Length: 451
Image 1 (tube, rainbow, N blue to C red):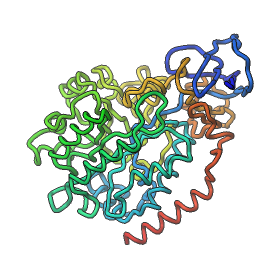
Image 2: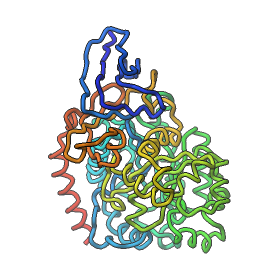
Image 3: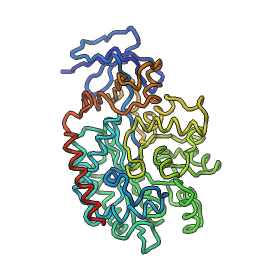
Image 4: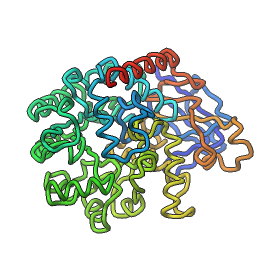
């Protein structure tokens, strides 16, 4: 029997599709009706929730993260360093991560994202020490009970310090082992089609941590398996210089040479591209995960989002790894994007709707999904509900603008596939305080192992 849930009387609903709405009807995990002001449901209603004083958005979509890095937030040795020295410092710590640490870190990062409005959680895990060979299995198992959609990427590193790469040899794998496990993970966990709760992409970490042969082989395997490809690219000028020294090519030329310049690829950061390269990216339909907080914290630069978008690239929003952001909050990341991008483009071109678009429809384009990201009839019932009853919102005239500029930071309710996962700010099954205590204990243990 279908149960119809009426969500009514919201102060504002950001549908992400320019459709005015004052209420929604949810049935069988999907949106069955979008109600305009003054309109009532045309079906029998079995449950209803009054959303007076609230703003509703589609569930936010995080397009790049490193869940394991929540264990090394504000690590004293890594603070105040640019990307390459920062990485070299942290790799010496990350090589000691255990499966228990990864499971707990993944749960904490996921809960933090969900508490900030995210319903689709992207993660890029690429540290596969000997004890973490089954990292993808650890993550899927650990994250299942939280109830969010997952876009997990099977990362890889094969070029260690002994071969001129950045990571220590203790966290890399041989290329055949990587490719075999990529194939296994896709077969075991990837769910194609509408309503998928777990999808898998293939994601060599970066041009300076894998060989050209692995980049090319990964592209072929992803094409054969019909999954997406993901990597870091053009995050810093140091990376451009490294690629020129190592390969005699700029990063984008190298990417194209490896068979990656196509519409199944999305890139993390995408800051340091020339005008010509931006046009090439757009023509190929490559997506960009825009990571404003991380880029500011590491002083990497500002992503040229509007030029990339105009050229034809999809722009998704991302919090990036917690060690380079120290926060996994998607709605705060939208505010950071608004502030950072206004420095580049001015106040008129970057609005609350612009950055919420990055966080919703931009993510669906990157992930090539048409079942999430907007509040329309037939779409999956993934949505975030924020109360505007805090001091920071008092006096606000535009609820949607207030959500971003006044600094919303936590949902009151979160729904995924028609099921409430968060009510009154608390996850329905996960004990947040117990999780924090365990995570803190394991983070301290990791620091002791690395000392």
